[in-house]
Image (cartoon, rainbow, N blue to C red; front, side):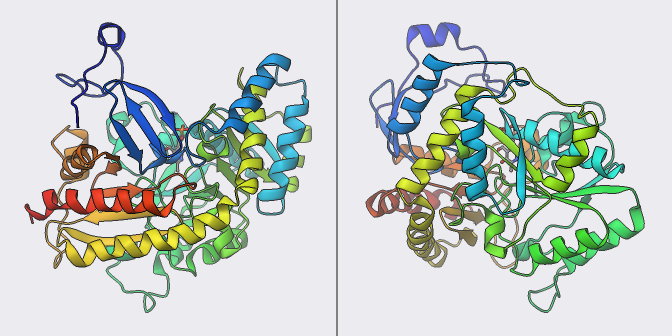
Length: 442
Ligand SMILES: Cc1ncc(COP(=O)(O)O)c(C=O)c1O
């Protein structure tokens, strides 16, 4: 692999990635097609995480690109208080794929904005203000969504820079059960504890969860968890917000992760895969009952780029492409194969503590010691900028020609849903070789 350095112009003008980057030379990317992207030195990389778990359709999808170009020619922008054909088309397309009963949509341009809108809808509609989230979660980086984020990206923002009224409940994380219980004898205590919180806190407007937790470890809950959460939130008049920014759009082998458990939340937020990140679009979808409230009450949210026609047109084309290419079914089938291949790595590498996932969404959690599940690194070390084992393994996969995202102690494997078996084999074999790096430190 040729070591690439940025071109002169890139070096001169790329000041800002806004991360601790002293002495770091970013890799310059010049193109992407299918499941691969190419750097300025001509190295090709297999995209085994769909960039930030968003390029579900792969790169260079002609139908989506054409739809964006057509919309740019016809009507690239109009004030959101007008309506457009693109908006009607996307609303109709969403009604076909979202859990039934989610009928009204707030369109914005990022996952964090969709979650901010969800919190405001929940607080205004219920007249209550507390939000329950969980520790292994990421909901975005603006004041409300970072406040509801359990992962360490929240730490440096405290106490200023985040909204009030968020509480954290236990995770449905069987590999590291917060109650040290075992499924199924646990009786899904993690869901019951959320009910305990609702009862004792009072004033709870909503519970927000990623139905399958994304960046914080690809954590799939036990089958009873989501239906139980739905039941108990309904019982107490608390809204259930499902953040499907990452887990939506076929990623888990269904249109949305909640479909696995036939759960309809009160608000579903999504972004990323809706346009496969070709343009930035997000949605907060809610029920008629909730949206009717806002027919007569002022909704205190809006953006210049709300319902931006370019993004809506890409959303319509994206949904058509998922259907045309049969990608939901394909995610289920290819995902089974991917999962089987990854589980073999657990047998082979003693630094692998757990392999878990659904569809084309898998996590490999690394441990220093399998017997006591000791983690390689802590959350604090991440924020302090210490060298993380997961980054060393991810850097090794890059040397093997495969890009994989790592966060804290987990590799997040989420190839484009168009990936072939050969591409899956290529990615798994790069990870297989790279895990020798963590094996050496066990
Ligand atoms: C589950 C989840 N929610 C919200 C967000 C925030 O989305 P955005 O980065 O588009 O604001 C992310 C981003 O990774 C996410 O994974």
